[in-house]
Length: 400
Image 1: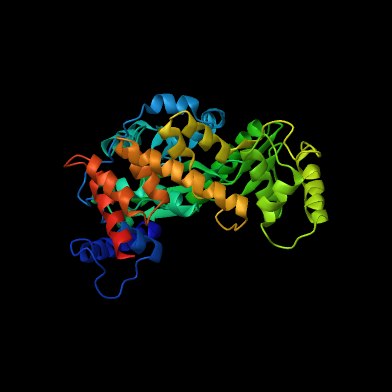
Image 2 (image 1 turned 45 degrees about the vertical axis):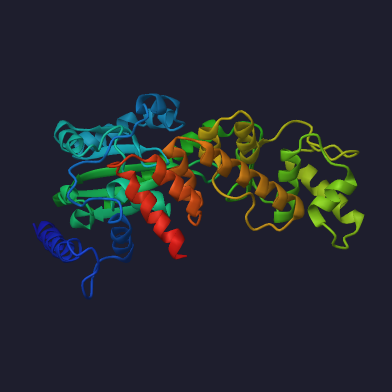
């Protein structure tokens, strides 16, 4: 009884805070609201109506996407545990992809009906731009677990809920989606977030075991990492630069050409590059030839995949895979040249496309690109809710 009284007081205080803030659209005086929630409210109000009754539906076939998702098998193997939590403890569980679209959900009959009323079900879009402040959107944005209670939700239709959410990551650190446990506000319990984290750990353990196949995967767009046989390999930035160049140019380099691509006109002795190559051979299993510096077999690499998509005219795949500039912190001449080549290629493909989704997705990675945001607005029809997002991005780019 004492716990329920405390929850009631917390809910009443949040409702009062919401009533002060939301109609005005800005903070009103001092606020006890958590900073991450307050910041999310301000971002969300640009694109989301707090009076909306349910989440919008994704256009894509979520049944097919779930069938192809790497999360499907590990989640299926945890069916019994998830059933105990959802049906026995009165929760509804959901798994999203990396965009915040729900691909799978499970719950007892009462909670499932409540969830379906707000599209907390497969196909519902729960990212911040579409459904405002909630545990799923915060976990997606910050890549950390979150709890959102009652009127901390931006949308009034969710004030009767409490949600616990944790991100799910691949072995290489990429966020694949999130797991969410939700129930009514009066059932809030501090152990629920720990339960969500435990479930995510179980999913990731099963996922990483399945994905730890032999081979090397290089990620160099937006961030840099090398995975060998399912485990991360620690490499210095210089080694990642050389490996990226070898992946992008499979026909290889002479010693002189690679030396210039890596060091430019700097006075660096020939033995330095030879030493770097010896180290790289050990790290990658010896798959680099010596007379001509060349990979023995093609390397799985996100930048190479984007390049292949561009060459095939597949703009959708290129935009999906392009997660940022090539090794953004590198000033190595060869990397700088390839960075500009890929950026120009993807950007040109987007500006040549008549699909607004391409411009919106690329705009996430290019917040200061005025032309991209203007292109998105030209393609979006009047009344499309995504125009608010494109307009906010354009305003930010013009202001900066």
